[in-house]
Length: 257
Image (tube, rainbow, N blue to C red):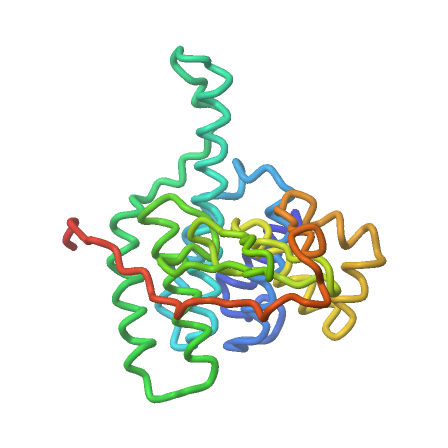
């Protein structure tokens, strides 16, 4: 049994396979670890079972599990889009080789209805624990499936305003990660987000240090866009980072159940 299969078995059994039945924390940890490993793995032999497990967890009574499952589903569709794009590029106008692509077997439009209903449930829920974060994560997953975009896409404008009038615009993506005082990493893919999420869980308070001084950790985000704040404007005279209010993405749902 591969490590990915071991983790999916935990998700499928709600933790029972490791004698932690109905432990939300164990199931979430398994999904988090699965996503991290999946960003480095060929998913062709893993996708069917994983997708079924994550879709089933959308019905969980724990909202943390629900949003984690939605995030992993969005990650798998992102992988499928990238493989499709690579196949088309290699074909150079001819019919692409579909054997290298990833068929997830699910219509994202159908999943949008379920996720949108879940977003409403989260919004109307009485519990305030991580409610805003869960709403944001579900909104990102909905936008990703509907528009074919990466993690952190929103209809807000996110930028850094320098004294000299220069700006960084993030093209619809609003999630960033500070690395020390001089760099900002744009989290614009589910793969990058999955790596950050896992590393933050493992490293906790040491995450920022390892990002700056541990090459093995920094290499995990090598594909993410990095902005050097010092090159854009004088660090000592910069203004605060400005963002507009994040507006939840709402898809135009044309498909009915």
